[in-house]
Length: 245
Image (cartoon, rainbow, N blue to C red; front, side):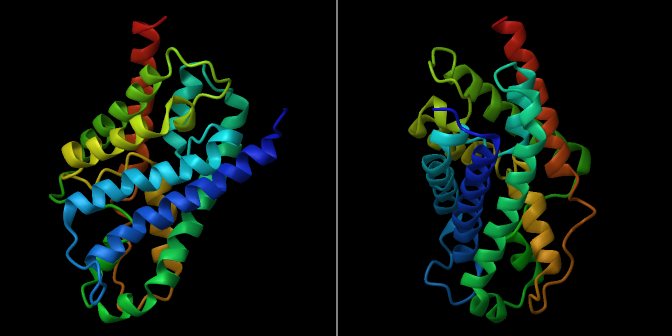
């Protein structure tokens, strides 16, 4: 069956929206006041982010390959496993999906946003900010985290037979635990964006939504979780092509 580019992008949009709804949703549940999940902690958050990716992949994989990440789309194109012609449309769909997912988190937890005083906590439910602000090192952390993500995905797909290479083509559970491992091991410094669609559109949602007492959207840092993942994906694709020419 031939799947049109529109259909592929539609499922990238839906899959990314679901990813952000569940991923940002667990952060909101763990951090916002009076939530029954308040204080869930880092282990809960990292596992739930892995499961959020799994759910997005379940929806999108049969139709788009389930990239759900602009950096991954770019990396796969550089590795010659995905057509460059599809990359702009995929990225637009992923960014739009990320925005919708973040808006839905706000709608769901509106009362808890109102009950939470700390503007940094509110921002942290939408996008990433570094634990210690050191921009060069923060950038390196995002590069390394995304390198691991894309390189391992490419390696997992070496013996695959699927025409689409993405999160969905290499097996749901290996990728789920890859995301959990990255979060637990490499997430503590920056919050492990490792995906521009996970950070930039939700940050924009934070900027435009009428969140009571929300404070700054952290635009001075916003380029780090965009450029870092793209650089990491490019490096991963380059290393993959050298090792597996």
